[in-house]
Length: 271
Length: 321
Image 1 (cartoon, rainbow over the protein chains, first blue to last red):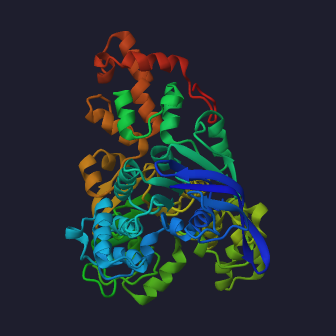
Image 2: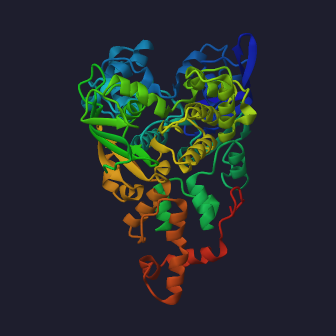
């Protein structure tokens, strides 16, 4: 699937006064692509994800989904192919078993029971919480990291083609972050498109090929721009920093184009 | 550690959330000396935040052998009320800690509740605005502040009342990198001024600067010692769902793949030191192999060549691409 955002503008309404949040954003994200949506706190990242998913309607500009626009009959269906995982999504777990919680979305879509069941087991597998072991557990009996992955399963069960993640690693312990990153990596390898909204430059560097920098609702950088060089200045100017591996390579005097993305890659290069 | 000057002296502390089957704190021991900076780590759900709330007198322990904080007995109602005056607590979410219309009113809030005279409050607020670099923001409404500014305002409000100890519960978790630097800088200055600090965190880089780190698992302390000692135990780190600082992850992986270092590097400087280290260079030139990695590592010479040519460039330098 392909999401195309053309000159999209959105403002929140605060007591009749428009507060601009997104200003003329153009972007493309599609299946198989991994896009980091970087930006300081309050830059509009979450708002932009909600606009892409159709939870907020742009004031101007269009979000084109596989060539269709809001007026088209199939648009709502296309929107459902975008899975949006909110910040700290585990706070919205509500069912008494893991399986039931994951089944909520597919049931809302009116899928037949056998299709719901298959989607639920598949989603639980994808996040590493196999149904046989975790399916009947109460969500609150799971660890924090497991709860977050369960919430992700609830979105995956609706079989999205694009996954939009809003600060997915915040407040997880380091082990849970590693587990979640491994899940995301596997999803990407299977062809899922990813948009990762975050101020965690290390995760963005590690998981994404393309980087967008959103500041004050405007895209100030896009594409596979250099995280070192002028890119490093851009990051620092907007409350971010250079990813660890880029900084390490710079200080080693190694070509920054070869900077590793993971510990394994760094080890391979330095051993 | 049972020091006479222990500001926090807790032994066998229990806490159970209503309606749950297991203790969130299960016989916890914790001792913190006056002026000490102690980091508390542990997997999600290990009891860190519960501990923070109890230390601040904001939650009632289910039981314990001893729970003395700043001389107040937390096992009694009067002790819990009294400790709230001496221990300040800063929480994770900057969104819900500010209560007033603007920055200076927020800092004044706690002082007003103490019933201090207006002139004294005004003096104190000015002091705090200066101390936390908020003078230019004094009339700013909270919703117009960045995350880091909000946390600094909240911290200024907490410390406007003179405290004997500060408890921080993942204070940087929701901040962008610049906000993290702002808040950690403010905390570091308080530490230099001698404030006793307990920092609950998931960020292993933040642990490095602590005098001591206490690791919790299922509500009790399973490690208590210097950060370097914790990070030298990879199996314990894995068991506790923790990690090493980024440089440590790389250093450890290199050591596991056969590379020999003098010690596990934990910061980028230490990692660079091990990879291109000046000490190693001199020993190699002198032909003396006290530095185990220098003599028998074929890659060493390559790093050495970089050492000479490559002094660290300022951040933002283009480097070579």
